[in-house]
Each structure stands twice: as C-alpha cells, then as structure tokens.
Length: 493
Image (cartoon, rainbow, N blue to C red; front, top):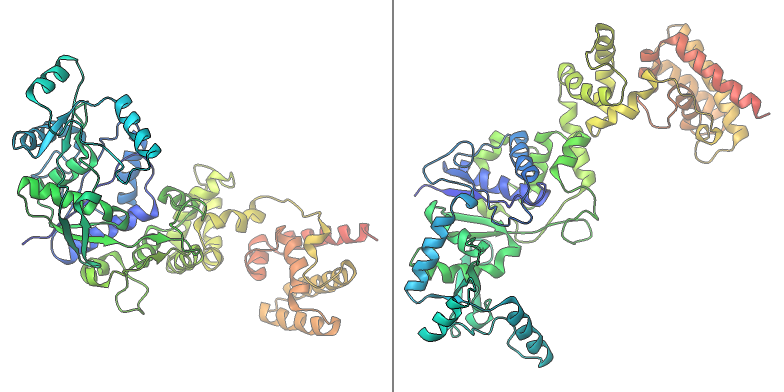
C-alpha cells in the first residue's frame, strides 16, 4: 500500500508554527515511506477566506523547501485539489446519504433553532443541540416546507444508541457514546457548500489518503468522521493526532507568547533550515540526543512512533540558538547575500550595491556571522559603520556596579591604552592583557573599561567585538569618536 498523506489548511489566516509542524510531519512521513504528500485547500469558509492567506501558504512551503506531489499548481490524478471547485461532488454524496435514509433534509429556520437553544438552556436540559425536528417529517410536512421556499440543509442521522471507536497511532483506541456526538450535524449547507466534516471525509476517501495526521484538537471530530465513513461504506484511514504546540507556560502557543506566523519569523531573519529543523523537534525526536537534521535526513529517518504523546514546548530562545548555529555555517558570500536586504531597508546601503559597499559588506560578514541570532540583527550591530550618531547619555557609558566618577577614570585611561596599542600595532590579545592589568589596579571588572569604549565607538552597549569594530571603522575614525566621548565626560565636570 502506497502511503498517501495530506496537508489541508483553510486559507483564512497566515501559516503559523502549529500548522507548519503538521505539514512537516505529514511531508517527512510520506517521504520516509516512499509515499505521496498531497496539498489540499479547504476553502469552503468563504466569509473568512483570503487570497493573501492562500499565497502565504504557497510562499511558506516554498521557503521551507517543501514540495507537494499532488495539489494546486502541480495537479494530480485526484483533482481538483481546491474544495470550492468540488461542490458537485459533495452535493452528489450528500444526496446519496439522503436517498439511503442515512441523512435528511432539515428546514428549520435560524429563528427556530435559536428558540430551541434558549429553551434547552432555560430548562437546564441534559440534551443540548439540535432536537431532530426534521428527522422524521411526513411527506406532507416535507412538501409544505419545500413550498414555503426555505432552502434546506442536509443533516446526518447519528445513532442515538451505542458507541463509536477509532484507533489512534499514538493514543490507542478512542471511544465515544453516539449520543454524545454532535446531534445530527449539518453536512451540506443551504447554499450548497459542504461543512468541514462532509468535505473532509469525501476528499480523504477519493484522494486515497491512507494516514491522517492532524492536531489533537480534532479528536472530538473523530467519532463523527468514523460514522460518516460507515454511512458511505468506506474504510477509514489510519489516524495519528499530533500533540499541541505550547509555550513555556504550558498553554497552547498563541500571540501572547510572541510571534507565531512563519511570515514574521522569516521577516526577522530566521533561516528556513533552522525553522524546519527546530519545529520538527517540537514533539518528535530520533533518539533523544541528535538535534541537527537536514531536510534530506528527516525525509529518511522520520517515523510516527517517535512522535511524543505529550505536548511540545516551543522555546523562542532555543530557536534563536538553532538559528545562530545555522548562521555560523554560512560562507561570507552567503552572509553578504542574506544581510544585504536588511541593510538596504535600513537605508545603510543603496539598492544598487556599489563596489565600495560590497567591500564593506565582506569585511562585515565574519564578525556579524559570529554575533547574529537572526539576520535582522545586522542592522543594530552594524549601524555605527553607516551612521555617526554619538551617545550623549552618560549613563550608557557606566557599567553595572560603577558610578560616573569611576566610569570616567576607567574610560579615559582604558581608551588611551586601546588607541596607543592600535597605533603601536599590538594584537588585541595584548591590549586585553593591558586593560586587564588596569582593571585590577582600579578594582573594576574588565567590562567596566571596555563598555564605555564600546559605547563611544558604536553608540551601543551591545556590538561587534571591539577589535572588529575598530578595524572596520579605521583607527583615525575610532580615535575621533573616543575623543568626542572624552569631551562629553569633561563637560560633566
């Protein structure tokens, strides 16, 4: 049996971390089994549908290097792969269930349904939901309803007795009493569009889906889908409900934790290989030890049995670390190519990069590679090279645990050592040793001397290594900026 899995998002919002992880698990499982990865667009929610969301889906998968074997754009034998183009199929199968007595037309108005809901709440009825009013209409009643002009929906006849069970690869057998399944849910709406449940089951069957890997939040829908498979006389696929992606507080990942849309991570300068690698590990592991995987490696080693049953924690700091590690592996050519758009957007370099700018970028690449967590870090880290904005806030020159007086002496004497050693052609390790001796003499930490020097040169307490900053600026400009900062301290006297 060929493994066939699908990723079937609804284009009603941007692709987020949880959805992308579902796509990755489906894709890697299919590839590891020599199977097919199908992309299906579930766009029947027309009120929330947006072209932007659909394009974001395509862009995200393309950026991650995930190619679908069948689906929109590429086609395939089971198309169309966009649900709004399959309406006649859903209508045909819904009518089939009506003709077989497994579903029925419902003519209840929204007003009647609301009144029923209010009565059930007021009476504190144990039975909440549709009251099956139209389940057994007589022929005369049905004709009268049709004559009224009401466009009916089609509802599934859910058994009121017994239980329904389905098996989940990770969680074992899951059983629910039929009376607890949504009472006679709508399959086909009055406008001819299917509900999620009907379209989902029909498409999975007709597209030959063998394994359904989806979020655990869909577990409550499992029994209903099994009932639909039984109503059609079809064999259900294998189910594997994936654990939630949570923040460090144990709650489902959401915007309150930080960015969740892949577009936002991409804009900040996370690399696709870092996102792909780390997100896959949020709920899956190979051996509990190996952390770094290429896409090609995951295509070979991914197995369902290694998916965790418990929720996975998305750690933003861990992702930063992963991204930094991948940045370190980039060549100078790659770093220059990656940082150029960010520096152009900041107005640091021209849209048509000049030869002088290109030379500066190649000098920047090595120190930036060692300091960036995300590519957008290149802007604050390199701003001092493109903009001469002196820091006039004395407090920024003062390291933790020091006062203005001690910071002034440390800066004046320390900067003299730095400049003198640079003029003498000494190595920076020699300069560090000389500054260390001064720090011991003054009874301050090493950073108490280097911080004001760094701020004087770069206008930032966080920057590239000092020796790199000096080298990039040049000795003459470095000395000028230090003298300017000295004047600031003198004005305070």
